[in-house]
Image (cartoon, rainbow, N blue to C red; front, side, top):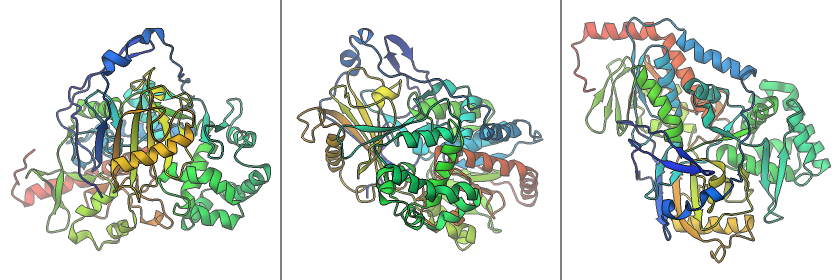
Length: 576
């Protein structure tokens, strides 16, 4: 298993000038003196590297853009959006502290950055420590020698992500989301090169628009199968949240058998859905995860509508959060890896010890790195506390993200997320169509999620690419052949994440921790912590808000503890 961290860029001072549809488009330049990330292995292989600026960009003005973005859906009046907005505003309107708390946060993914952002909004001083030289955690991305970006994952922003949508609005960057048509598009394994669509009509409210989309699709499920599936879902519709939570003990496959849902529903729909949601198959995934997703997507008219970020996540999403934090007096430091959580005699945190010998102290401490990393650093004195002991059941799922640049523009694709329904691939997109910064009128770049990846994470990049090409030959039979006798690979990048989002397996829900730990002054953030959106970007942001909320609620106690500590002990030098 390759767990080495191979960093290939630093976003400080990065600039890009790209031309889209004949108009000069200049990316904003973001600078940062320090930032970091998560353990991920990524490699680059170039096959006949091209000069992108001098080659593929010639003649761009004469070409027409075939992709089309759709207007931002009206999300602002939904109950979930308003509730998320109220939580955001509570930080800005909270009582200003007489002395801001210094809160040390480990991890500059969405959870850590969100925690810091909302603490800064409340008047406190967050210090974010990132182990790697790139922002974003599971959103991390790197630029290669050609100026092309490759990412840790294929990230989709849904209408049913109210806290993420509020975050974009608060930062003034909502225009960076490229909304696509309200559809879900599945490849047809039995009809190579063909796709089946679920189109949600704009004229119908939820959940009727979703019901209509399912009923109108006659290629994937027969009418008897649709009826049996609907009957199987009735208890979930009638039982509400209590029923959803009670299904945590069953896998998707077990639940379907119990409800009498035909196996073909699993084969046609839920294998693809399970891999897209959690990178694992239905015989492992908890049914609660599926029901939560269905509830979010079907109860809001625009809940399942998808958007792509208009460029690389570190610059286009993470840096605006960093700029906001810094504008309010907070800090974000890259290349700051934690080696040990040092404790006081009473079991509380004394400081974070970094690998470079630095000791960072604060009034409160947050660990916002993935659960697998945190488990390695849990102090021995805490390990038998049930709050920490239960974390043993939460284990990250391995996932591989593959990028392939071809020597031509593929025709059998869409400006959208596509469900491959392959045994090896989860979802994919032609990013040369779907993303403005990655747009190329002459060549396609497919970004694919390779999952489940348990058996592949330790294999060579060459084996992974060969297996991917075999699957792509089925999706593009007229354009791609496994031996590259048709479309040829110009280059590829393989990004391996040995432990990504936690596996949402049965009976793990009770093991998810609250953000406030039983250790005074110590908190957790991350999509694995307790919140209703499970392992997702929305879950990470919401966990950060809950974490910040807990610290704000505890601020007087934390301030008092710090004062008592200063009075009872000689000051300890801290290298900040």
